[in-house]
Length: 258
Image (cartoon, rainbow, N blue to C red; front, side, top):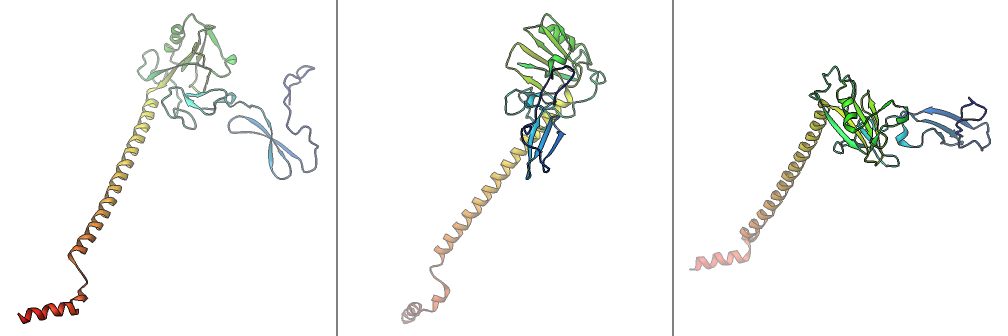
């Protein structure tokens, strides 16, 4: 699989089974996966084997960590740009859509809050439009005063400022503190996250209280049962059928003799 715009191929990507002989039972197919990756599969007679994969690095996939997510190349899992929100499949903030201008968001900041994160850069930045600014403050001002801007990323080493005119998706973690991101988050989205966090805390506390109450009730019931058995044993020296025994009759005869 390669491009033939020139005499020499520009990009050669071979299938893993290219050296295997083709038989009547051999099957190959290529499929576009839900994550945006293009994969090829080979039937070896009993099962399908992965035969080709266009993108091998997870962070190179389209939006691998969803909205406001952070993907670090070589890392094992996704995280969130704010380091506080728990990551969930689909992103860190749900239903991130709409038009910021329609929400009355411009330079006022009444309907959104600002999220800043250092050590990040946009994916495929070579395909993005950028301007050169003299400082991070100037780069942020380009986005802050523009209601169609969702975020801006600044590279202090080059002075490049990448202005994002679409909802924030997955950013790449670089570990370079000179690369800083400025992101707008709708206030209602922040509130939704806080509500779910509070609900989780309340549910956890209620479950713990219920466990303590149930456990305490079981302990008290067992203690009362044990105490009741002991008091019954102390008050009853023997079964009532022993009242007619020879020892009891002897006591009764002794009393009559007196």
